[in-house]
Length: 260
Figure 1 (cartoon, one colour):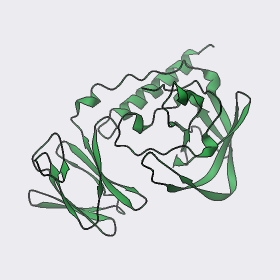
Figure 2 (cartoon, one colour):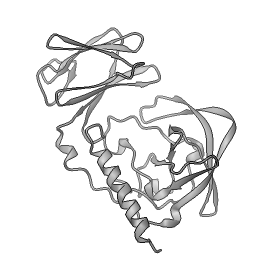
Figure 3 (spheres, helix red, strand yellow):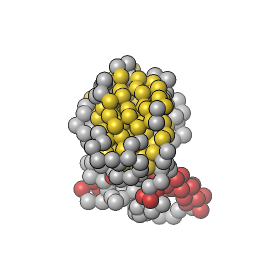
């Protein structure tokens, strides 16, 4: 297997971007927790004993959060009130060293808090990878479905969600015809949640993520060298989707990131 300098350089640049995103303030290494919220209920956030949302670091009282009906909320600190509105894109904000975000999963709203000063960002985990293989960067057929479909996907928190699907990526791998369903991501960067036989011993047991590249009307690049560990591999506070049955493959795809 020969890897050209250009191919190696492109992979190195991708790896650097991957680690920069992982260790960013809004990455996955500094997540302190995820707490389900109840509409109409006010919760206190801080390090003081008795706080509804107890932080291990920070001030005794970071603030008070009230989730309201209609996907709005208020956050009060030192007499100042911040109004939050999901429809207006205002469900994430920063307070001192903390990044707070109200997430939505079906009708469940939860608060995630990240510590921007966390030492975890300075010492990211070592992520081993399979040897780089240019043959595993594959241009797949990108086929629009005759009619969009909706599939039910489970996740690590056992909360089934309905996901729309408009395309399928078709390719051949090790003599197997594969049809990958994109379930998240965007039109120019579709996300594929997959699992293959390396999950038995070499890769994260439940799933890996791959993001499609170079999307055209009828093609998409699937680079298995860029298959990554999901957020759940780094923190128990993430909610990661499990692969749809179409993306479970009875072969070993020895490419991308290995299990931590």
